[in-house]
Length: 371
Image 1 (cartoon, rainbow, N blue to C red):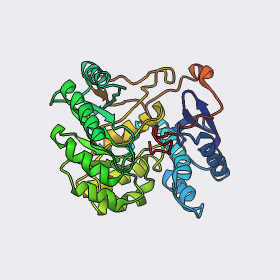
Image 2 (cartoon, rainbow, N blue to C red):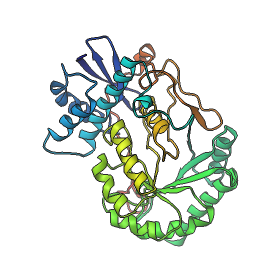
Image 3 (cartoon, helix red, strand yellow):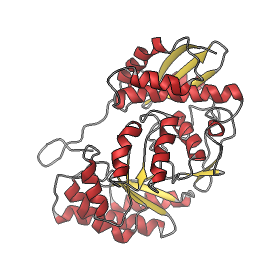
Image 4 (cartoon, helix red, strand yellow):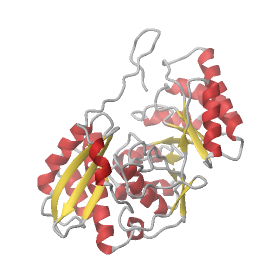
């Protein structure tokens, strides 16, 4: 079997699907994207393409090593996101060629359904309360909400406002539903320590990205300051970036994104590293249904899996979108990634890939904010 073509399809609102075809008529799909840099990743895929056309897509580890190590300059969001989309498509092809789901090739499933969580939000505390209440009424057993953007340090009013918002969520969901709080790297380590102390009485399942990932020591300091588990990983790439996080015990939950970190097998390696530190695995995914499909395959197989993020179940993209029942998605049974792309439905969603991320600005002094 040989790879015969590779194509990137940018689809609204901001997804990029990678389509890999073979000379035996088997097609595999992946997601190759960096949010706001879709066309840059597309070019990275095109630069890798001459090294892949004519190769056997089932030699996944060999081709991964060639793409990653053969470029001399390693890592980073652009290269590893391009590799991730290509690698996902190879696993899809391998599973389809053998007639089995990807998780079967990774050692089989260790659970029969995958726990999901829902993003909630609101401009006011009341809107946030209602959003949380609606999620519980839909059957979700976990919700996640962000803190507001902040300066490096903030007055007590900011802290009180965040506490009011989180208290409203906890009141809405009760104590039987899990709550995660996403700091999104928006706050400094010093402010993060103040916030996590204030949030401890609400017993969050975890705090996500309490500070930016560039300084692992700072995140470890935050982790040591609180009883709340710390989660991080969406902006870390390959197993090499997670080594220091785990060695310094800066996080109790690792969150690699399978569209960014290097793909499915790289995600499995990261999960195995985390397992040796008794840390949980919760793959990040604010992207489309193909990355969700890849994430579900790994979630089915990883013993230290915690919960899965999603924003799209595939309506308008997949012939059979995923279904959440009582906060869970049942174990996928179809071969490969377990999905069929509805290419007719994609036709009116195709666009240039020019989606750009918004820039956050502090309203008081008009300085740039981390968002």
